[in-house]
Length: 604
Image (tube, rainbow, N blue to C red):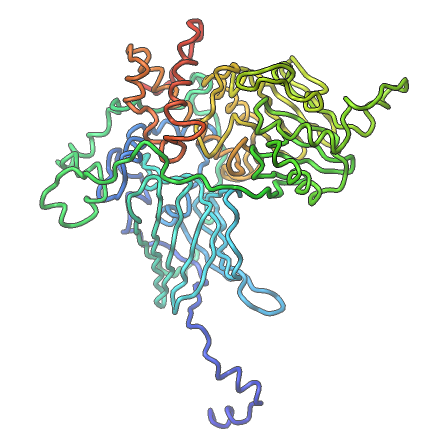
């Protein structure tokens, strides 16, 4: 019969049937984990100070030792999600299915629904490229897959900051992951290989096993709604332990009679041979500088944020662009040298006239293009006054900023010996806490953030689009630049970041919702701002505690209060180094005896 069927088919059909298809299996189904595996990770979580067998460096260790679990009671932390490299070790149920093109029936994506925190993960199978460096990061990251025999191999980038272990041991947002999904009948093995240049000295490999669920009865929902858990916590406090003052780190070693050196982890502790000597790992030390170079963004490119707001990257500071029927509104204009590229990028988004420029602060990488944009559109400086009200401004661009920006642009300032050209100056300023504009059917609010990055910072909120342009109060690729000469302070930066968090509301499980455009770096949501705010607050607490102990600036620098964050934000050369940041923070905390900066409530 088989031969008869074979010889009765048409030539083309026979040719197609005879072709060898890629070997693969169906992963589709509902899966549950082997409960005996990773019991601690799936349940109560590991002990503080238990970093056994993990190839971590000193920066990861210090960050974990500073972890105070009370931080999870902060509203903005309560619904945080396990990131994709960790979530498969949660108490989850897993559903896998394929999405196919309705016309060709080719697999477009393999989907995972993970019950823990109700996460839907997409593994793209259609050959698409990964997003650019300035694109947002998510809990699950951006994943592409391919079949290698019967194994699905997945590559994931753009993952948010998360856990290596749920005891404060961090995974950075620069981590990438390779996975292998392997099915043998009713058994599924998941292999995860995590590469983190910030906190790991070598790739970390973990496996989990699942069995096919044929009985139903799975609870697929894991809703979370944050509440006020602690009522008397000082506003802006971030619970953390000062270096060397966490009282719980020895509980694990004392309970199991383990050498402290072994519990502290490190690359040498990952191998069986280590047990013979139990010496402290000498590898995994962190230098003074950054582990991940900041990618050069030489091209001026735009990405849609949401609704009518776009972000333009690669032109000095990031630029927000709001478009609509009335025209174009810009938040900042980048550097002067790239003004032609900026105008070209805007024209690719909209051919409407540019009507507003809102400047977040005075620095040249944010106001440098003001003059060129004003001259290209029409500067009110060059328009003759007429008697008809409103006619003078018709066809020109309005530039809005705080009064301090106007004062600094209209006179020599710092290392700039000449004022900016008058076309670049704000045409309207504000001295109150806020200024409002209604444009393109949307309320746009400017909030003054005093004594933050500078004394003239504005945070700009597009209410309908739900987008915040934070200016240089938020920079995902460096420590905050505290411009002391222009009235900046570390406390003002923290208060500015907390203002951004007041405006931001996440969509689901601390992801999406309000989107935030930083002054430099990648597009963010609330969870990313929380991580940055926590970092600045913790560093502030450490430096403040050292000042109270009578330590000098040189002693504080030598103590490296930023060591656990240096691989992410630090620099030993260039415009803004780690030493410069520590010195600016120190001076801003000590220059005014009347300034009272409280330690976070759990900083000891």
